[in-house]
Image (cartoon, rainbow, N blue to C red; front, side):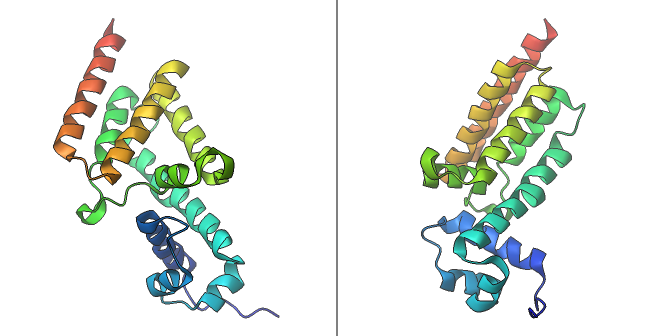
Length: 182
């Protein structure tokens, strides 16, 4: 009979998620995960199998706790282009003023096409579908908006000046709104 978990799963997955966001999958050691969570590797592996299983669980948690919440808070159904603008601007305010960036974007870059974890593709589909819906079903604009979203996140991770990014985002959405008014 397996022993019950002696830790809060949400707290642990949040800590693991942040560790992977900061350092990436390959550079995050088991010791880093123990330090981040306060849970022994034996307990983590007992619950999640191995480092990859823990990464998968933390990544799925990221999609639910960060991505889906961000969409709900900033670009809910019916919010249109104005909601997308708010969603994009929210990317510039990372908690604590850090530049760890997005786990989805960071993982897409780290793993590339051949080893890309499933949660990355799922997140891209979620974002593309949200963008398409808020842009009136225009798939080409949705794909371009997904590319811009990922580009902004790469620049945030690289420490690019957020004031300039904010101006670029506003200019982009001003243009979309003007085009939409025609």
